[in-house]
Length: 426
Ligand SMILES: Cc1ncc(COP(=O)(O)O)c(C=O)c1O
Image (cartoon, rainbow, N blue to C red):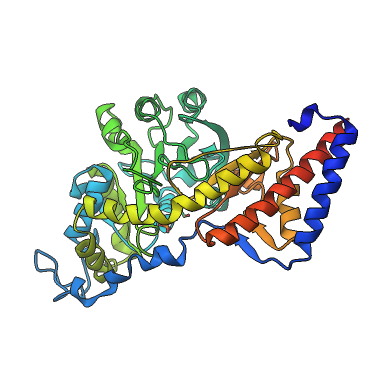
């Protein structure tokens, strides 16, 4: 029964009942950490074969480069080709680097602040206040980068097709201080949304007052479907080329959630001119990446199909966990109308909105039971969810039994906090 249709007495009865369950949970000394979207141990084990010596051979690339030695700033040819397939670009448009795409993003934005975006553009720090568009809810670590570097963030809501493109077009049209935009275009963190081709096209072709406007297209989950094949999406790089804005797109990704987080390979793709500029920047920072790890990855996967086949094994482990959360939400909260949730086809998260704006209270209550969820607000710039409604659920790490227990606690907390809000209102 929809809680908003119940009278005070009925609500109080349910509240008493749920409070009893809550106190029981509290006495159980639970200890579950659902804060971050990490792969489970079983998923990590899927890549253990890659550590076999056979994938290193004589340490040489196909064109005879010795991966044990210095050099090859842009990454070895094999891994550039692999990422080129993944990002639908030419290998010359790829730089494969270290172990973290987030690191590339922090680094590039810092470089744009200090040195500009290339082709003589003035460094962003010398252009007064600058701003980034932040689709919300979004990835906390993106927002942390722009906050740390003093870039003002502007929220734009995400709908089922991606970020509100009308709002974005308005923001960039006349304001040259809007320099960039964050995005997780496929199986977005945390909503799971796949940006539509129309959104991709309009982002590529929209008129921007700033010539040095850049889209950080964080394709972290590009092959991370939960079943079947990865969703198809128009290439932002191709759309930008076609629209005459080739330098606008910077595509990023890594094998963090394909092989090992922290021990994978990260890469970026962009226009040939941007790649030349980035190489000028990188050449001062490093002599070259970890080519041994690149070789291992390239030889293990061979090509795009090799990666997709591997991701199907991840999906078999992940899908039952997502199903478990959705099933419990439906069973526990379906009729009460106190929570709405995303039902993603890929990625690492389920995004939920509390109907009665009580996200921080829910997370705090669950914590008292020993069940940790991502802090309320963290899916918004500056950690401030204006409606106090969104929470990111990360089902990947715990085994299904633990996940089930943690979500049951969560549901009880949602019921209690929602009823309290409803009673306060009446
Ligand atoms: C959207 C998104 N981008 C980037 C990352 C981190 O990627 P990497 O390990 O390559 O730094 C994550 C990790 O959760 C993520 O969700």
